[in-house]
Length: 472
Ligand code: ARG
Ligand code: ZN
Image (tube, rainbow, N blue to C red):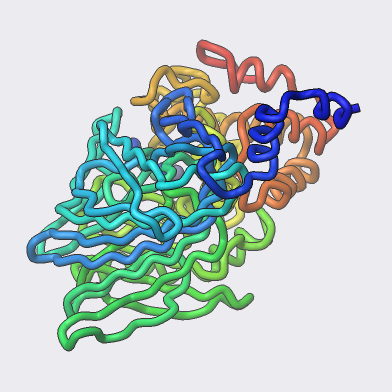
Protein backbone atom coordinates (compact mmCIF):
# COMPACT_ATOMS: atom_id res chain seq x y z
CA UNK A 1 0.00 0.00 0.00
CA UNK A 2 2.76 2.34 0.99
CA UNK A 3 4.49 1.54 -2.24
CA UNK A 4 1.53 2.42 -4.43
CA UNK A 5 1.14 5.75 -2.71
CA UNK A 6 4.79 6.48 -3.30
CA UNK A 7 4.69 5.67 -6.98
CA UNK A 8 2.02 8.33 -7.46
CA UNK A 9 4.24 11.10 -6.09
CA UNK A 10 5.83 13.48 -8.51
CA UNK A 11 9.41 12.57 -9.38
CA UNK A 12 11.22 15.44 -7.54
CA UNK A 13 9.30 14.78 -4.32
CA UNK A 14 10.18 11.13 -4.59
CA UNK A 15 13.87 11.93 -4.96
CA UNK A 16 13.83 13.98 -1.75
CA UNK A 17 12.00 11.22 0.10
CA UNK A 18 14.49 8.62 -1.02
CA UNK A 19 17.40 10.83 -0.02
CA UNK A 20 15.85 11.39 3.41
CA UNK A 21 14.88 7.82 4.18
CA UNK A 22 18.04 6.19 2.92
CA UNK A 23 20.01 8.79 4.89
CA UNK A 24 22.39 8.95 1.98
CA UNK A 25 25.31 11.33 1.92
CA UNK A 26 25.13 14.73 0.39
CA UNK A 27 23.50 18.02 1.07
CA UNK A 28 20.01 16.60 0.58
CA UNK A 29 20.04 15.14 4.12
CA UNK A 30 18.01 17.60 6.12
CA UNK A 31 18.60 17.88 9.83
CA UNK A 32 17.14 20.33 12.32
CA UNK A 33 18.72 21.86 15.45
CA UNK A 34 18.87 19.70 18.57
CA UNK A 35 17.13 21.20 21.62
CA UNK A 36 19.29 23.36 23.89
CA UNK A 37 17.90 21.81 27.09
CA UNK A 38 16.09 18.72 28.28
CA UNK A 39 13.39 20.65 30.19
CA UNK A 40 14.36 19.23 33.52
CA UNK A 41 11.75 20.50 36.00
CA UNK A 42 14.48 22.20 38.08
CA UNK A 43 17.26 22.83 35.55
CA UNK A 44 15.44 23.22 32.22
CA UNK A 45 18.52 24.18 30.23
CA UNK A 46 20.71 21.35 31.53
CA UNK A 47 21.54 18.72 28.94
CA UNK A 48 20.69 18.87 25.26
CA UNK A 49 18.30 17.17 22.89
CA UNK A 50 18.78 15.26 19.66
CA UNK A 51 21.58 12.94 20.64
CA UNK A 52 22.83 10.64 23.41
CA UNK A 53 26.49 10.42 24.38
CA UNK A 54 28.10 6.97 24.51
CA UNK A 55 31.65 7.88 25.45
CA UNK A 56 33.74 10.83 26.56
CA UNK A 57 37.50 10.89 26.09
CA UNK A 58 38.80 13.82 28.12
CA UNK A 59 42.44 14.68 27.75
CA UNK A 60 43.31 17.33 30.30
CA UNK A 61 46.52 19.08 31.08
CA UNK A 62 46.46 21.06 34.32
CA UNK A 63 48.90 23.53 35.75
CA UNK A 64 48.30 23.71 39.52
CA UNK A 65 50.44 26.82 39.92
CA UNK A 66 48.54 28.94 37.41
CA UNK A 67 45.21 27.12 37.55
CA UNK A 68 45.25 26.79 33.76
CA UNK A 69 43.52 23.86 32.06
CA UNK A 70 44.06 22.70 28.48
CA UNK A 71 41.51 20.18 27.41
CA UNK A 72 40.49 18.06 24.48
CA UNK A 73 37.12 16.39 24.72
CA UNK A 74 36.19 13.75 22.16
CA UNK A 75 32.55 12.86 22.55
CA UNK A 76 31.09 9.88 20.75
CA UNK A 77 27.34 10.18 20.49
CA UNK A 78 24.38 8.86 18.55
CA UNK A 79 22.02 11.22 16.77
CA UNK A 80 18.40 10.65 17.76
CA UNK A 81 17.11 12.83 14.95
CA UNK A 82 18.58 14.40 11.85
CA UNK A 83 20.76 17.21 13.20
CA UNK A 84 21.75 20.43 11.47
CA UNK A 85 23.24 21.59 14.78
CA UNK A 86 23.42 20.42 18.35
CA UNK A 87 24.47 21.82 21.70
CA UNK A 88 26.94 20.99 24.41
CA UNK A 89 26.89 22.57 27.87
CA UNK A 90 30.03 24.48 28.79
CA UNK A 91 30.55 27.33 31.22
CA UNK A 92 33.47 29.71 30.91
CA UNK A 93 36.75 28.61 29.23
CA UNK A 94 37.75 29.39 25.68
CA UNK A 95 36.80 27.08 22.84
CA UNK A 96 39.68 26.90 20.40
CA UNK A 97 38.12 24.65 17.82
CA UNK A 98 35.44 22.08 17.17
CA UNK A 99 35.46 19.19 14.73
CA UNK A 100 32.67 16.79 13.92
CA UNK A 101 33.59 13.54 12.19
CA UNK A 102 37.06 14.95 11.55
CA UNK A 103 35.85 18.05 9.74
CA UNK A 104 36.01 21.57 11.12
CA UNK A 105 32.64 22.67 12.48
CA UNK A 106 31.24 26.12 13.08
CA UNK A 107 30.28 26.93 16.62
CA UNK A 108 28.98 29.73 18.76
CA UNK A 109 28.39 30.31 22.43
CA UNK A 110 25.54 31.87 24.37
CA UNK A 111 25.52 31.56 28.15
CA UNK A 112 26.37 27.96 28.97
CA UNK A 113 25.37 26.66 25.55
CA UNK A 114 27.96 25.75 22.96
CA UNK A 115 26.15 25.30 19.65
CA UNK A 116 27.96 23.18 17.08
CA UNK A 117 27.09 23.23 13.41
CA UNK A 118 28.74 20.31 11.61
CA UNK A 119 29.88 20.83 8.03
CA UNK A 120 27.38 18.13 7.04
CA UNK A 121 24.08 17.40 8.74
CA UNK A 122 23.98 14.26 10.85
CA UNK A 123 21.57 11.48 10.06
CA UNK A 124 19.19 10.04 12.62
CA UNK A 125 20.92 7.02 14.14
CA UNK A 126 24.39 8.15 13.06
CA UNK A 127 27.18 7.63 15.55
CA UNK A 128 29.39 10.70 15.39
CA UNK A 129 32.46 12.09 17.06
CA UNK A 130 32.84 15.64 18.21
CA UNK A 131 36.20 17.00 19.22
CA UNK A 132 36.38 20.19 21.26
CA UNK A 133 39.70 21.85 22.07
CA UNK A 134 39.42 24.29 24.94
CA UNK A 135 41.46 26.04 27.59
CA UNK A 136 41.37 28.58 30.36
CA UNK A 137 41.05 28.82 34.10
CA UNK A 138 38.08 26.68 35.11
CA UNK A 139 36.00 28.22 37.88
CA UNK A 140 33.79 27.28 40.76
CA UNK A 141 30.11 27.78 40.01
CA UNK A 142 27.55 28.65 42.66
CA UNK A 143 24.54 26.35 43.06
CA UNK A 144 21.01 27.66 43.51
CA UNK A 145 21.43 26.63 47.18
CA UNK A 146 24.61 28.70 47.50
CA UNK A 147 27.16 25.89 47.60
CA UNK A 148 30.15 25.65 45.27
CA UNK A 149 30.65 23.14 42.49
CA UNK A 150 32.50 22.95 39.20
CA UNK A 151 36.28 23.32 39.45
CA UNK A 152 37.33 24.10 42.99
CA UNK A 153 40.85 25.06 43.97
CA UNK A 154 42.36 24.92 47.42
CA UNK A 155 45.79 25.97 48.62
CA UNK A 156 49.04 24.44 47.39
CA UNK A 157 47.79 23.75 43.88
CA UNK A 158 45.08 21.33 45.00
CA UNK A 159 42.02 21.23 42.79
CA UNK A 160 38.93 19.07 42.57
CA UNK A 161 36.02 18.91 40.15
CA UNK A 162 32.50 18.09 41.37
CA UNK A 163 29.29 18.43 39.40
CA UNK A 164 26.06 18.02 41.33
CA UNK A 165 23.80 19.22 39.90
CA UNK A 166 25.31 21.23 37.04
CA UNK A 167 28.98 21.89 37.84
CA UNK A 168 30.45 19.57 35.21
CA UNK A 169 29.89 22.19 32.51
CA UNK A 170 32.55 24.19 34.35
CA UNK A 171 35.34 21.82 33.28
CA UNK A 172 34.28 19.89 30.19
CA UNK A 173 31.76 20.27 27.37
CA UNK A 174 29.05 17.63 27.45
CA UNK A 175 25.45 16.62 27.65
CA UNK A 176 25.21 17.58 31.28
CA UNK A 177 22.04 15.96 32.52
CA UNK A 178 21.83 12.73 34.56
CA UNK A 179 19.56 11.09 31.98
CA UNK A 180 22.46 10.77 29.51
CA UNK A 181 25.00 8.34 30.94
CA UNK A 182 28.20 7.36 29.15
CA UNK A 183 31.55 5.60 29.55
CA UNK A 184 34.58 7.81 30.20
CA UNK A 185 38.31 7.82 29.61
CA UNK A 186 39.83 10.69 31.54
CA UNK A 187 43.53 11.37 31.17
CA UNK A 188 45.08 14.10 33.29
CA UNK A 189 48.62 15.39 32.90
CA UNK A 190 50.11 17.25 35.87
CA UNK A 191 53.59 18.37 36.92
CA UNK A 192 55.77 15.65 38.39
CA UNK A 193 55.09 15.30 42.13
CA UNK A 194 51.33 15.78 41.82
CA UNK A 195 48.79 12.99 41.69
CA UNK A 196 45.75 13.19 39.43
CA UNK A 197 42.85 11.00 40.47
CA UNK A 198 39.60 10.34 38.63
CA UNK A 199 36.76 7.84 38.39
CA UNK A 200 37.22 4.19 37.60
CA UNK A 201 40.43 2.24 37.08
CA UNK A 202 43.91 3.65 36.70
CA UNK A 203 44.97 2.27 33.31
CA UNK A 204 48.42 3.82 33.22
CA UNK A 205 50.63 6.34 34.88
CA UNK A 206 53.54 7.50 32.82
CA UNK A 207 56.09 10.26 32.74
CA UNK A 208 55.87 12.65 29.83
CA UNK A 209 58.29 15.28 28.67
CA UNK A 210 60.63 14.86 31.60
CA UNK A 211 58.72 16.90 34.14
CA UNK A 212 55.10 15.77 33.94
CA UNK A 213 53.04 12.69 34.71
CA UNK A 214 49.97 11.51 32.78
CA UNK A 215 47.34 9.53 34.67
CA UNK A 216 44.89 7.61 32.47
CA UNK A 217 41.62 6.63 34.14
CA UNK A 218 38.79 4.58 32.69
CA UNK A 219 35.15 4.28 33.71
CA UNK A 220 33.76 1.43 31.66
CA UNK A 221 30.38 1.41 33.37
CA UNK A 222 27.93 4.18 32.42
CA UNK A 223 28.32 7.36 34.42
CA UNK A 224 26.16 10.47 34.74
CA UNK A 225 28.31 13.52 34.07
CA UNK A 226 27.61 15.10 37.48
CA UNK A 227 29.48 12.14 39.00
CA UNK A 228 32.67 12.69 37.01
CA UNK A 229 35.59 14.01 38.99
CA UNK A 230 39.24 14.94 38.74
CA UNK A 231 41.33 15.68 41.81
CA UNK A 232 44.83 17.09 41.67
CA UNK A 233 47.03 17.23 44.73
CA UNK A 234 49.86 15.71 46.68
CA UNK A 235 47.90 12.76 47.96
CA UNK A 236 48.92 9.73 49.93
CA UNK A 237 47.60 6.83 47.90
CA UNK A 238 46.75 3.40 49.27
CA UNK A 239 45.43 0.53 47.22
CA UNK A 240 43.92 -2.83 48.05
CA UNK A 241 41.13 -5.24 47.27
CA UNK A 242 37.94 -6.24 49.02
CA UNK A 243 37.50 -9.94 49.88
CA UNK A 244 35.28 -10.37 46.81
CA UNK A 245 37.81 -8.74 44.50
CA UNK A 246 36.71 -5.13 44.08
CA UNK A 247 39.84 -2.97 43.80
CA UNK A 248 40.18 -0.10 46.27
CA UNK A 249 42.05 3.15 45.59
CA UNK A 250 42.12 5.83 48.26
CA UNK A 251 43.81 9.20 47.79
CA UNK A 252 44.11 11.33 50.90
CA UNK A 253 45.48 14.84 51.33
CA UNK A 254 48.42 14.53 53.71
CA UNK A 255 46.81 16.95 56.17
CA UNK A 256 43.86 14.53 56.58
CA UNK A 257 45.79 11.29 56.70
CA UNK A 258 45.58 10.55 60.42
CA UNK A 259 42.00 11.70 60.88
CA UNK A 260 40.75 9.77 57.84
CA UNK A 261 42.44 6.47 58.54
CA UNK A 262 39.77 4.80 60.73
CA UNK A 263 36.75 5.47 58.49
CA UNK A 264 38.57 4.74 55.22
CA UNK A 265 39.86 1.44 56.57
CA UNK A 266 36.26 0.26 56.65
CA UNK A 267 35.61 0.80 52.93
CA UNK A 268 36.28 -2.86 51.95
CA UNK A 269 33.96 -4.12 54.67
CA UNK A 270 31.29 -1.59 53.66
CA UNK A 271 31.52 -2.68 50.00
CA UNK A 272 30.94 -6.28 51.07
CA UNK A 273 28.09 -5.33 53.40
CA UNK A 274 26.42 -3.29 50.68
CA UNK A 275 26.79 -6.17 48.27
CA UNK A 276 24.80 -8.45 50.56
CA UNK A 277 22.12 -5.90 51.39
CA UNK A 278 21.69 -4.12 48.01
CA UNK A 279 23.10 -6.70 45.59
CA UNK A 280 26.52 -6.85 43.90
CA UNK A 281 28.62 -3.66 44.08
CA UNK A 282 28.00 -2.09 40.66
CA UNK A 283 31.57 -1.10 39.76
CA UNK A 284 34.96 -2.75 39.44
CA UNK A 285 36.60 -0.36 41.84
CA UNK A 286 35.85 1.62 44.99
CA UNK A 287 37.68 4.15 47.14
CA UNK A 288 37.86 7.74 48.23
CA UNK A 289 39.35 11.13 47.49
CA UNK A 290 39.91 13.15 50.64
CA UNK A 291 40.60 16.83 49.99
CA UNK A 292 41.89 19.19 52.69
CA UNK A 293 39.22 20.31 55.18
CA UNK A 294 37.31 23.35 53.95
CA UNK A 295 37.81 22.64 50.23
CA UNK A 296 34.10 22.39 49.42
CA UNK A 297 31.96 22.05 52.52
CA UNK A 298 30.20 18.83 51.53
CA UNK A 299 30.96 15.37 50.21
CA UNK A 300 29.90 14.05 46.81
CA UNK A 301 29.33 10.49 45.64
CA UNK A 302 31.56 10.84 42.56
CA UNK A 303 31.45 7.47 40.83
CA UNK A 304 33.71 4.80 42.35
CA UNK A 305 35.59 7.42 44.43
CA UNK A 306 33.53 9.84 46.48
CA UNK A 307 35.10 13.22 47.19
CA UNK A 308 35.33 14.34 50.82
CA UNK A 309 36.16 17.78 52.11
CA UNK A 310 38.33 16.91 55.09
CA UNK A 311 38.44 13.53 56.83
CA UNK A 312 35.00 11.87 56.75
CA UNK A 313 33.47 9.89 59.59
CA UNK A 314 32.15 6.36 59.20
CA UNK A 315 28.52 7.42 58.55
CA UNK A 316 29.54 9.74 55.75
CA UNK A 317 31.70 7.11 54.07
CA UNK A 318 28.82 4.66 54.29
CA UNK A 319 26.43 7.29 52.87
CA UNK A 320 28.61 8.02 49.83
CA UNK A 321 29.28 4.34 49.27
CA UNK A 322 25.54 3.57 49.34
CA UNK A 323 25.12 6.18 46.59
CA UNK A 324 27.15 3.91 44.31
CA UNK A 325 24.04 1.72 44.11
CA UNK A 326 21.52 4.54 44.57
CA UNK A 327 22.38 7.56 42.47
CA UNK A 328 25.39 6.32 40.54
CA UNK A 329 24.28 2.94 39.22
CA UNK A 330 20.54 3.75 39.42
CA UNK A 331 20.52 7.44 38.52
CA UNK A 332 17.67 9.92 38.70
CA UNK A 333 15.76 10.65 35.50
CA UNK A 334 15.53 14.28 36.53
CA UNK A 335 16.65 16.47 39.42
CA UNK A 336 13.19 16.13 40.84
CA UNK A 337 14.04 12.55 41.73
CA UNK A 338 16.83 13.45 44.16
CA UNK A 339 15.16 11.68 47.07
CA UNK A 340 15.84 8.39 45.21
CA UNK A 341 19.51 9.26 45.80
CA UNK A 342 19.47 10.90 49.20
CA UNK A 343 16.60 9.08 50.91
CA UNK A 344 18.20 5.75 50.00
CA UNK A 345 21.74 6.74 51.03
CA UNK A 346 20.42 8.09 54.33
CA UNK A 347 18.40 4.95 54.96
CA UNK A 348 21.52 2.92 54.19
CA UNK A 349 23.19 4.72 57.12
CA UNK A 350 20.28 3.68 59.34
CA UNK A 351 20.60 0.08 58.14
CA UNK A 352 24.35 0.04 58.66
CA UNK A 353 23.92 1.34 62.21
CA UNK A 354 21.24 -1.19 63.11
CA UNK A 355 23.33 -4.07 61.87
CA UNK A 356 26.52 -2.79 63.54
CA UNK A 357 25.47 -2.32 67.13
CA UNK A 358 23.73 1.06 66.72
CA UNK A 359 20.09 2.03 67.15
CA UNK A 360 17.45 0.32 65.04
CA UNK A 361 15.93 2.08 62.04
CA UNK A 362 12.58 1.87 63.84
CA UNK A 363 13.95 3.71 66.86
CA UNK A 364 15.51 6.33 64.60
CA UNK A 365 12.27 6.74 62.65
CA UNK A 366 10.44 7.34 65.94
CA UNK A 367 13.10 9.80 67.02
CA UNK A 368 12.53 11.83 63.84
CA UNK A 369 8.79 11.77 64.42
CA UNK A 370 9.35 13.04 67.97
CA UNK A 371 12.22 15.38 67.13
CA UNK A 372 14.36 13.52 69.65
CA UNK A 373 17.95 14.59 69.00
CA UNK A 374 19.35 12.29 71.68
CA UNK A 375 18.92 9.39 69.24
CA UNK A 376 19.92 11.19 66.03
CA UNK A 377 21.39 14.68 65.99
CA UNK A 378 19.44 15.37 62.79
CA UNK A 379 16.04 14.46 64.24
CA UNK A 380 15.25 18.05 65.14
CA UNK A 381 15.72 19.37 61.62
CA UNK A 382 12.83 20.54 59.48
CA UNK A 383 12.41 17.20 57.70
CA UNK A 384 8.69 17.83 57.15
CA UNK A 385 9.13 21.20 55.40
CA UNK A 386 8.05 19.75 52.05
CA UNK A 387 7.29 16.36 50.52
CA UNK A 388 10.50 14.72 49.30
CA UNK A 389 9.12 14.06 45.82
CA UNK A 390 8.67 17.77 45.14
CA UNK A 391 11.26 20.17 46.50
CA UNK A 392 9.98 23.78 46.24
CA UNK A 393 12.59 24.91 43.72
CA UNK A 394 16.08 24.21 42.40
CA UNK A 395 17.66 25.62 45.55
CA UNK A 396 16.03 22.91 47.66
CA UNK A 397 16.93 19.64 45.97
CA UNK A 398 19.56 18.95 48.66
CA UNK A 399 17.47 20.08 51.65
CA UNK A 400 16.73 17.99 54.75
CA UNK A 401 13.34 16.56 53.67
CA UNK A 402 14.96 14.99 50.59
CA UNK A 403 17.35 13.11 52.88
CA UNK A 404 15.48 12.41 56.11
CA UNK A 405 11.86 12.31 55.05
CA UNK A 406 13.11 10.37 52.03
CA UNK A 407 14.58 7.80 54.42
CA UNK A 408 11.34 7.80 56.39
CA UNK A 409 9.43 6.93 53.19
CA UNK A 410 11.57 3.82 52.92
CA UNK A 411 11.00 2.96 56.54
CA UNK A 412 7.24 3.36 56.07
CA UNK A 413 7.40 0.89 53.17
CA UNK A 414 9.33 -1.52 55.39
CA UNK A 415 6.65 -1.22 58.08
CA UNK A 416 3.94 -1.99 55.54
CA UNK A 417 5.57 -4.92 53.74
CA UNK A 418 7.85 -6.48 56.37
CA UNK A 419 11.58 -7.12 56.25
CA UNK A 420 11.68 -9.97 53.72
CA UNK A 421 9.78 -8.05 51.03
CA UNK A 422 11.50 -4.79 51.89
CA UNK A 423 15.04 -6.10 51.43
CA UNK A 424 13.95 -7.95 48.30
CA UNK A 425 12.65 -4.61 47.03
CA UNK A 426 15.96 -2.83 47.67
CA UNK A 427 17.92 -5.53 45.85
CA UNK A 428 15.40 -5.75 43.03
CA UNK A 429 15.39 -1.99 42.50
CA UNK A 430 19.18 -1.78 42.37
CA UNK A 431 19.43 -4.86 40.13
CA UNK A 432 16.64 -4.15 37.67
CA UNK A 433 17.72 -0.53 37.11
CA UNK A 434 21.45 -1.16 37.24
CA UNK A 435 23.37 1.44 35.17
CA UNK A 436 20.11 3.10 34.18
CA UNK A 437 17.82 5.94 35.19
CA UNK A 438 14.62 5.92 37.16
CA UNK A 439 11.98 8.37 38.33
CA UNK A 440 9.81 8.55 41.43
CA UNK A 441 6.86 7.17 39.44
CA UNK A 442 9.04 4.27 38.31
CA UNK A 443 9.84 3.55 41.95
CA UNK A 444 6.31 3.67 43.32
CA UNK A 445 5.07 1.40 40.54
CA UNK A 446 8.01 -0.96 41.02
CA UNK A 447 7.57 -1.12 44.80
CA UNK A 448 3.93 -2.12 44.54
CA UNK A 449 4.59 -4.64 41.80
CA UNK A 450 7.55 -6.22 43.57
CA UNK A 451 5.96 -6.44 47.02
CA UNK A 452 2.38 -6.98 45.91
CA UNK A 453 1.28 -4.47 48.54
CA UNK A 454 -0.85 -1.38 47.92
CA UNK A 455 1.28 1.50 49.21
CA UNK A 456 -0.92 4.39 48.13
CA UNK A 457 -1.23 5.77 51.67
CA UNK A 458 2.54 5.87 52.06
CA UNK A 459 2.96 7.78 48.80
CA UNK A 460 0.07 10.16 49.52
CA UNK A 461 1.17 11.05 53.03
CA UNK A 462 4.94 10.64 53.09
CA UNK A 463 6.14 11.14 49.55
CA UNK A 464 3.72 13.66 48.07
CA UNK A 465 1.73 15.04 50.99
CA UNK A 466 2.16 18.52 52.44
CA UNK A 467 2.43 18.97 56.17
CA UNK A 468 4.03 16.93 58.91
CA UNK A 469 2.97 13.28 58.82
CA UNK A 470 1.93 11.77 62.13
CA UNK A 471 2.95 8.43 63.58
CA UNK A 472 1.41 5.71 61.42
N1 ARG B 1 24.92 14.47 47.09
C1 ARG B 1 25.80 14.91 48.14
C2 ARG B 1 25.61 13.90 49.28
O1 ARG B 1 24.69 13.91 49.99
C3 ARG B 1 25.58 16.29 48.63
C4 ARG B 1 25.68 17.36 47.60
C5 ARG B 1 25.43 18.70 48.19
N2 ARG B 1 25.36 19.69 47.16
C6 ARG B 1 24.71 20.82 47.30
N3 ARG B 1 24.65 21.62 46.29
N4 ARG B 1 24.13 21.13 48.42
O2 ARG B 1 26.27 12.95 49.41
ZN1 ZN C 1 23.95 11.89 49.64
